[in-house]
Amino acid sequence: MAEERMWIDGEWCAAENGETSEAMNPATGEVMAAVPKATVGDVDRCVEASRKALQGAEWKKMDPAQRGRVLNKMAAVTYEKAKELAVIESSNNGKTFREALSEIRYGAWTLEYFAGLTDKIEGTTIPVPGSRLNYTLRQPLGVTAHIVPWNFPLQLALRSIAPALAAGCTVIAKPASWTPLSLLAWGKAIDEGNTGLPSGVLQILTGSGSLAGNALAGHSGVDGVVLTGGVPTGQAVMAKASEQLTPVTLELGGKGANIVFPDADLRYAAKAICFGIFMNAGQMCWAGSRLLVHEDVHDELVEAVCAEVGKWKVGPGMEEGVRIGSLVHERHRAEVLEKLEAGLKQGGSLKLGGSAVEGDGAFMQATVVTGVEASHLLFQDELFGPVLSVTSFASDEEALSLANDTPFGLLNGVWTRDLKRAHTFARDLECGMVSINEYPITFPQTAFTGWKHSGIGIEQSQDALRFYTKVKNVNVKL
Image (cartoon, rainbow, N blue to C red; front, side):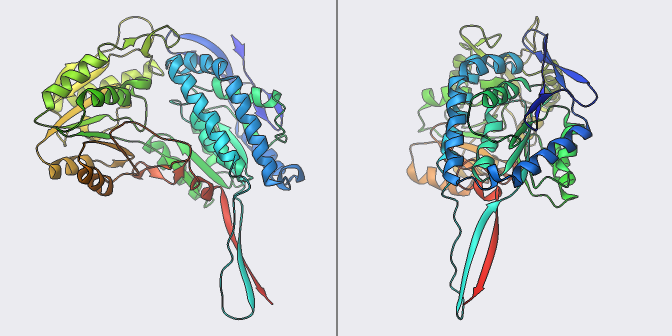
């Protein structure tokens, strides 16, 4: 069993008290590594080093274009090590190697995108009365704490690390306690990769969310907190950050709907619907966990979805041909199955799956439930597993009402050839993202953002840089 270390102040070290936790392979139950459990003292040391690096001339006075070159070198290292990192992520998270590799390369692409923006963070000049010059500066927010989820352990870490570094901030990244290994391996690759990143600018702190994450969120030396996670975790982090009036970006849950009309390409839609709920074993905030389908094509589409996912092999993520890997932990699978059972008691018919896969590992069958009503748990709650709820509708007005009848508002999909209908739904859906005739889809240059309980703030795109910079207004009497 490997003995992992945290990356604090340019050194790889154990926790202050020597305590560790076990990182598992959820497909086999094997213990992969012992990982340090950071103490509050470790958090303090990490924040102190981050503040020192923030004020250090090597980073503070670095030409913004040079920061971009550093990020490009970090991207190159990520591409070079992508397959090695994907093996680690697949083994520690349970997802397929194919998914892990794609996500890590997306993370490298994100680094490249923000590398190109480092010297384009600009202020403005403002016309004011009298003989004056008035302008704004956009300066780094400061020390940023990044609390990373377990469902996309490396890609979602890079999604926020890239704009933070591009803006000139310093970064403390805390991976989820279940899935720390790919981020630690990436940190080692960056440390050894001759990227030009000054010591202490990027640190990786491991440990529990309740201790290390909580200490970071409420630390007086942290200037911004970024979290991807569930709504209760987001509420707890926001409450803790409020003690210091620390700004937050929260990317939280979702209950996305694919809304399918009779004029849609049903064969293509069925494949995308499966991809949108069954990849990563459904453990995605932007999963299309609700299928809203017009009554005229309901049966045809449900049959097509079941036939498509019936071809998807379930098994260990590193096995050839596997399309649905293990859930992240047996405890999480138990929670998904418990919610599924409670939901079925309220109504609906089990069309496919519905059970754990027998044998070792936290595997679960792809599950489809029809006849789900808007008041049901399966319509309203985020199960975060491979469960698709199906609801029929008769009109555009009913479809829109159903789509918006949820506390979440992250990503929804619309399937139609009708241009007017597509753009009307894009305007009227209560969510941060809409995808028409494909699902799910995003790019580093497009905003990833949720409304309602799906979060606060924006990840990706130039808009993300606004969180990592603060505005200063300067007035000069001439």
